[in-house]
Image (cartoon, rainbow, N blue to C red; front, side, top):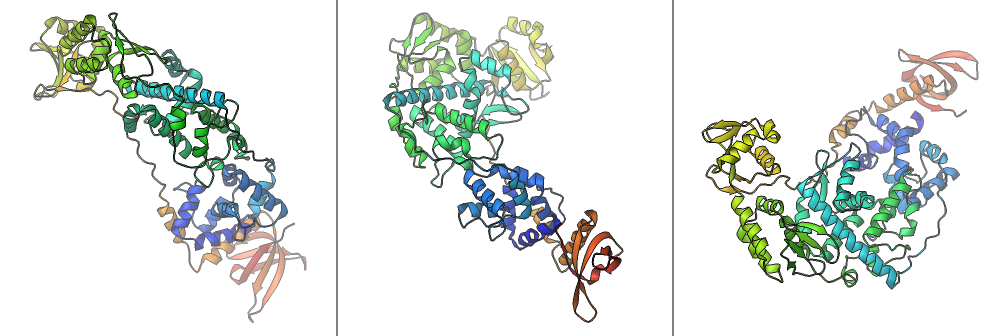
Length: 570
């Protein structure tokens, strides 16, 4: 290994810092790798463990080219595949695989031969089903985001939803079997992000929720396409036919499961019909062209912007409600059924939730008057008025003198009830001059009162009401590239005139450890050289010991006299 790594070490030493950083990134090198010089780097990149990690990332065409070259001990022909393999330090500049790479590849099966098949265009029935599924998926993602906005989801150590979370989401009307796919679709579109093992909505999710169905679908498809792995992408920015996805990474043991998940997401987004045919709107997306949702939306039911408000405190939308209206209505009422004709129900809790989110009695009435086909029934108007009047009876603020949280109310019975409420016991409330105080933070106290269904309002020091935001949207930080500058600087610091001597010491040490036979070139006093065939037995004190095969005697040679040493393959 040491002898075979030297040419790679020399190539690494000649590369620029930018090229090294690109290579280390592609090979998932740790920035704190304990490499002393380029010899260490070369040996590590050709190590069996490192190769076992990089070979599964190769695409099918790259794996075919490398496998053929490794078995025939020839060069990979000039091609995009050769350039990719060279960028991963798997082949020499002439395209021949490094010996360690050839050995690792020889142990892997040859990629199966696959005849690429052009996608079959979907018929009208298949397209209609695909469009309906896409519409259902867009609606389900919206439901997922609204639920996560109110209560971020807790994730397991592996980054997946727990069974308990899935059960609760299933009770909320989402299909438990598609939850993982929905989360992945929302995440790749930048609508959800992981924050301290909690899955929460992002800032961009708010704008997405209020967008049209066409814009919603386009954003999901764009995120899905951009997140596809190399093996299924084509040079135009699109993807290869979905029928070839299962063969895209032949040496990745996890790929069958990953590809199945990707195909399911494509199906949920309406990019693939149940019979694997291709809807018309998916063809342009597959070719990397701008996303055009018009062929899809032509098959979707028309959105409505009016609802029926009824005396039983329910609301009926006679068709799919426009997204912006649906989102706002669901802050005031709980949705009871989701279909082309959805129903909603108002309650004191739902109206109070809207008031907590910043609505007022006037804004709620104005909104309902604007969307109702039947006016506002008296029972609903009374509910809004009564809830608004009650909201704000309890005021939560921070005492500027003591820094403690103060709870005040004109209704002393509410204060008495809170002081003995067992659910509020962890707050440690104490009476103080007609109010309750606690050392617990203002926001924590406020949300504890809201959860206990007290009509609480946040106010500042001047008594101005504040809007409570329990789970603010996350703004995911862009991924920061690994900084390889310190590692590269450390490698560069060991370059110099002593590099050859250091490399020779490594070769000799490796030969002694493996009891290898060396062809040693010795520099003689008269300037000539002499070759010896030695079985290396020891190294120390600046001298190499070994048995001379030709003379069958032990020899001790000064390392300083050795000009070259080559391992003789047995």
